[in-house]
Length: 461
Image (cartoon, rainbow, N blue to C red; front, side, top):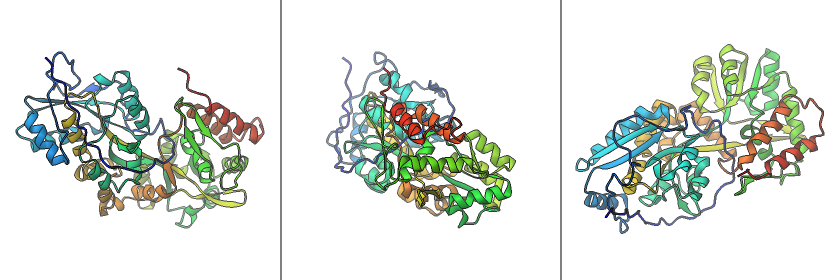
């Protein structure tokens, strides 16, 4: 008879509510890997056919801490432990090293690791195709948590959950909120850097200049240069509306709730926000660019400031040298007021497959991947902002301009992950019209009504 694994059933005492937010389908990961995971090592994957592998009995239901769980796991582990890991292409060597170090911690246990390439932005799609065949441990973008939990494809964190929450800064920390559903922790926060802020060239702007979009556009126009931001993306253009007090939330059917065609809780009309965006788009010091065009503009000197994220920090730093600067987003003029631009705060997480034959070991491995030392290493090698609070507060991390800017912007950000699937195309079309200056001269209310109608539609089955 095949033995059936006993999942760890420790329940962490957790409370708190989720923030509302939006996600980004394009920048959620920095890997361009194909959706299908590609095996890097020759070790057998933990997702091998159940008929070929004896499933080990691991009963840690009485464990109260990681140490107790390890004792129980070792005592009940009778054969090799096969674990498949999926991670982004650029993380492969780093993850392999972590696996080797993890195995060295337990010399009495034989581990076989299979490490595959999987883009964090498409992890959910690959996993939900066949959850039982997915990796035991996988990295993914935080806006995928809800769908993975609803599909039963994420193991609740039940070893050291309280410690993990505390290490990330407590239940109210954004990285924890990204990983919590219904008061339960379902993933291991790895990074807190998937958001955007303002890069700028200090040759053209002072620290006071970059507090105001009006001033930045004026300075850029005088120099014959540009300040860039991508208008044809809901991930970016929501920053104006959320900053003005409007809201966004998702429904289970994939539709999105938007109140942008009305009046915000701060008394700002949606049409007033649209007019502000049109004014910005018409300014000779502004250009709406996608990511590749932003990079080109920075390197050829035409763009001297722009809204982007840590994935472009290296090109900005290398191009501008000592003049490289980064800060939180500026204010913009709307209805005669200065309004602080909002943003999205996104996180990358590691998850454990509840179908894993070695779910206890998989949880310990995911926890190891996101410990303090590993988050510092990821920052050093990849420039990734740590989710671990102590690591994020370290001197070397705080000295990084992009990470510091992201931390500063976080006070104005909403949590990644609550837009519906039908948010993206209508918001892209809406932003493209504004970037082009509303060429058909449509009524601003009509533009907003069309946007709200589009995002309100359920995702087709």
